[in-house]
Length: 145
Image (cartoon, rainbow, N blue to C red; front, top):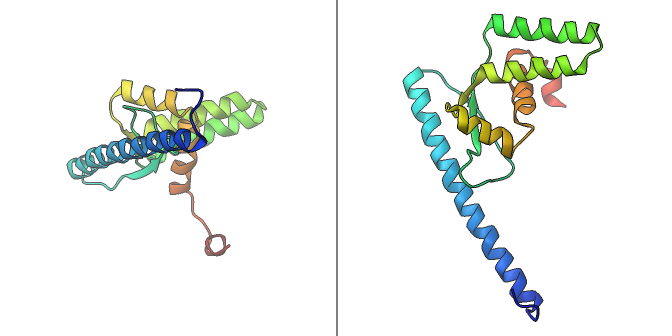
């Protein structure tokens, strides 16, 4: 980088980097969707997906999950209720993380999941929120508002 660069030259370099990152992110998402599609075909069930807002080289940007089973959801509710009784927010977070991990389908590889959690630290909490949305009913009025 030259210190006598013009603003336009600097902006052009930045734009080129953003463009390259966007292309790499789109390719990663394509890879992720291909893998998710294969899992759906193999398991004969439709999976739900979430997409990361950012991108880190080599890390999935799309994850897939399934709704919890009735026993998994009951365990989650029991843990959340115990956490509320004890006024223990850490226990509530642990319950959310356990529910999310239980329903997370893609990526399947433990190292890839760790990379997703490292790149996007809020993944498990966001995933737990989405998982719960799939098993809790919503009133028609809530949908309208």
